[in-house]
Length: 90
Image (cartoon, rainbow, N blue to C red; front, top):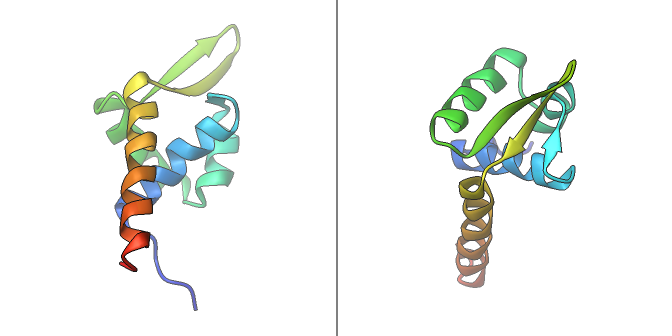
């Protein structure tokens, strides 16, 4: 049985999904990629938007989530920390 993801891992997965889609993703696609319920995903999105890690952009009749500069910086620093902890087997 797989381990549950930590809050930090879920945040990383959400932001990484946006980055993997070229920096913007439709809400429905983010729901699928995040592997969360809609209600739970919206709680994370609200929190990430308040922390200025991502934005909701309306373009004509479509909505997209995009990463902010701080969101890109978070992902970069997360990777560094992950590499560091993996190097020590943590």
